[in-house]
Image (cartoon, rainbow over all chains, first blue to last red; front, side, top):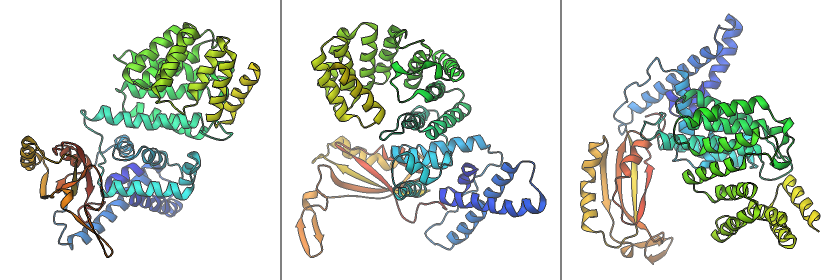
Length: 383
Length: 110
């Protein structure tokens, strides 16, 4: 409803007010005449009518201003469908002219309807800080005139990637809180799942949207066991239906030619989710998939994950030089999983003193209570 | 249409002839793509600037940076996507451009 109304006003604050006015009108009208057959449609029509009135008033005002000469043609096709409006709103919220933080906050606020205090809470920020971030972003959208359009075919791949990245960020933030005791933020994960489903419905021919949905589904399937290392998780607690759905989506996305980074990540996640245990995982296949992922997305984090998979497929002796290369590379300095992975490989090679040093280095960087607990346990076992 | 200022931040001291030529051709290229350059100005090098802060005069630009403000033009475009596509045509040797909407020619209701 907000999306449809914002198309008319081109101003999100005004649109929000129009929607609220529509709810107020509904309370009065429905109490008198009964609830209509389609309350959602009634509200959308009412909100858009409010928006058109606001627009009309603004135009009248404008016609008196000599500087603003050309009133624009009325550009609201009547047969505009709601799904297109939602998609437009998603592309506005994830516009590359907005910072990633603003994209994430706007998507939660305007597409998912999450209240500002809850968004602030999810990202460990104060409410005024988050409110200011949202206000600034909405002002920029209005003043710089970020368009309410679905990008054309030439631009679409780059723009979709921003949308997918925002949804993925929500899911991973939901999956591992950066700090504190509570590792799972189910709300964010649920929102990411809703958004990913919506995106697949709105962009059915986009394989990466399916890849992303599969990836979020696997995270969601494992929500009960999060906080344990993947190797130690109780796999009987995983949601098998969600994993099966993810597997189907991965297969369908892979069938459409060269896979993108979300599809490849989903393929890896689905393989893990289907393995009977950590040891019995199809490690050679996972090494291959990480190799592909590294090709389309050359990130040192992907290289680290590949090295961990190599240590399982071919042994820690083969993988350790890759870890040492990443240390020399320097881009992962301060990233806690690098010393943690190194510690694990050294421990498996029986090089206990060096392993203990690496565990201590990882502990110095880890903030999450569950991860700290694991690292401390390993360190005690070595002593 | 909305108006945007395009501020050119250029790190090169001397512009090669082909860049100057491209600057000359810019209004035509913008017009071909449905936009319009309404006004424009090129600035003398930062070393010629004088800054006034309160009562204090200093020799040089307000903001010292490797890529100083070298010019500004005003662009008319349908929306930000259009404006960004047009602003990308600006020839720059070393640096970039900043695109910012103008007050009075932007906003929700026009």
